[in-house]
Length: 352
Image (cartoon, rainbow, N blue to C red; front, top):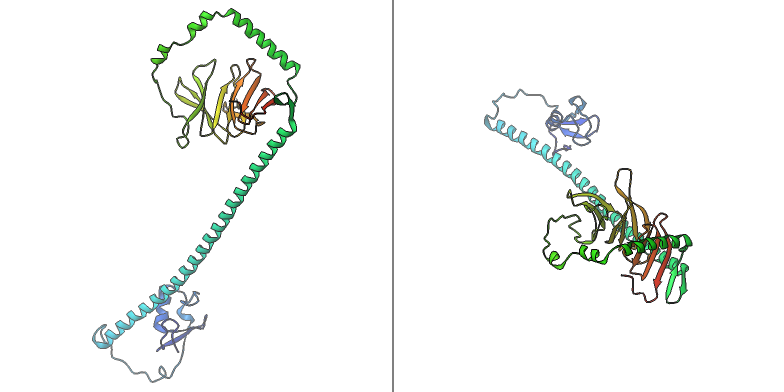
């Protein structure tokens, strides 16, 4: 009868009433004293749960053995060695069991990692496919809109949603008349005196420098100064953002985030708290402050199929013109954010 722990023939065998396993008494009692559990089934186990197995050897008439001092003589040394051997056997069994558990946990963790990697790879592939499909849809929609709205007239193609009506023409004529009257009253000599001279420009020096845009995509591509408040500056960068800056206080007031590609032009409205931006993502935006005073895109202008390279404001302040690398320019009503006309060059040289 071999012990379930040491694998050797048990000299004093006992059987667990709970699991039915056979053990060497001294080994199992040490295990119970240390953990209180069965080393095989990991169940709760007490010394009362052990049943002694009667053999011919332990049925022999008992003979009183001499009492020897511990570790005195050969028997004491042998007992000490036996105790140490028992401890080693228990520790070895525990380590083997712990090693098996660790191997199982490691295998499960590796399986989870492999499954996670496969899921991530599939999601990345699906994301790339979705982006490609979205790009195709946008290109097809832009081509369809341009094709359906285009009308031929001489050397130009004009796309007109609701058209530049008589009311718009009247406003522009009134503005032109006011500007013409103002120009007559302005003396040419006065204009010449207000222009900076070459020697004045040569004496200019840098007063301050402000790193406004991201250093990962450096570059300020455009700038505009507010016509009424000369301390307000708006800049457009290669980092796809426009920055509103107060050069008097040296503080960044707001970051205008919407565009997906570089900013190509920025513009203040002279009388309203409005900012215009154009971008290489084929769109322009009209920005206005929200309740907290932060600028948000109020309207997005997306009639162009190429990079929107610039914009300008009609002197009346009611209309915006945008130019694109798709060889077209658009006439926008700012209040309604509607495109009143789109003019395209047949030569496809772009409007720069």
